[in-house]
Image 1 (cartoon, one colour):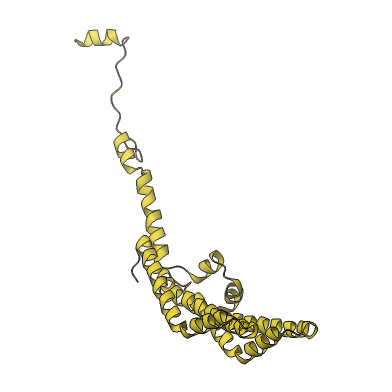
Image 2 (cartoon, rainbow, N blue to C red; image 1 turned 180 degrees about the vertical axis):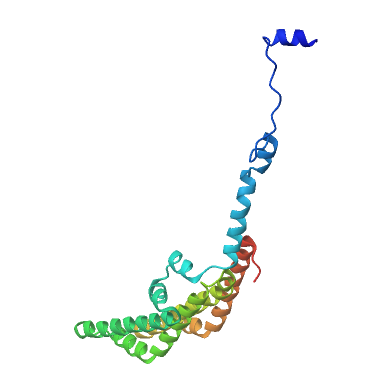
Length: 219
């Protein structure tokens, strides 16, 4: 096509030449290449989530996972929190036993009297159990690895302590009521407390291994 024909086709106007891109502008390809896709945007979040699984600040876990007196006392008092929580728990047990003793003045129950004497004679074991569970729960909040290692011990200690109290109750009721089966069950349960501890400790580590596999954390 000649120059006259092209001018006639465009109404006598010369078509504008392609202008170079201004500073700060880019063509569609470069701009689309610079944009982040949803997959790319999700990668930093996944890395942050994985990093959060590797290490968590204690204050985050205190707020996210409240745990009774251990949570209430550990939050403001830090390392002394579990000690204060154990002391408060022991004080509540002491008050409860004296309330039962006062009420038992009316009912004159031999079982309540025996329970009062036994608990008062073993307060040190109650305090030791409260203290162990409190500090195990406290240190398990510092990281996921610590939780995977310490939570099985906390569960085993709590279960063994409960089994010890249940064994005493079965023996006491069986002896006072003359039910030999209960006495034998209490003796069997009390004589296997170490076995109960290690069984629940092993089960706890199996659960921790499964949790570590899901979280992709080595411990």
